Amino acid sequence: MGRKNQNAFIKKQKEERKRKAREEKKAKKEARRSLPTSSKLEDMMAYVDEHGNIVSGTPEDEENKQKEERKEERKEEKKE
Image (cartoon, rainbow, N blue to C red):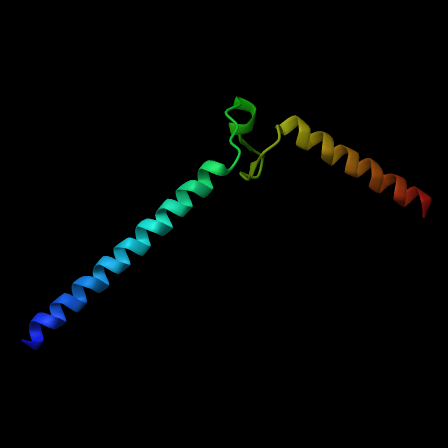
């Protein structure tokens, strides 16, 4: 008789875990749906730089940023 009660208890525990898992999954799904999505091609693009790192900007943008940084460094060096 004790075995029957134990099986019922285990069954209830499993049902409770499954219910919690379903609720969590539903909450995650709703959270993903609430996030803004963009289907623009520009937003989906990723670029690889010369070192193999993935960057969001085009290689030309990255080069221009580096050139500007170098110019600023040179200006600072001249000031000193």
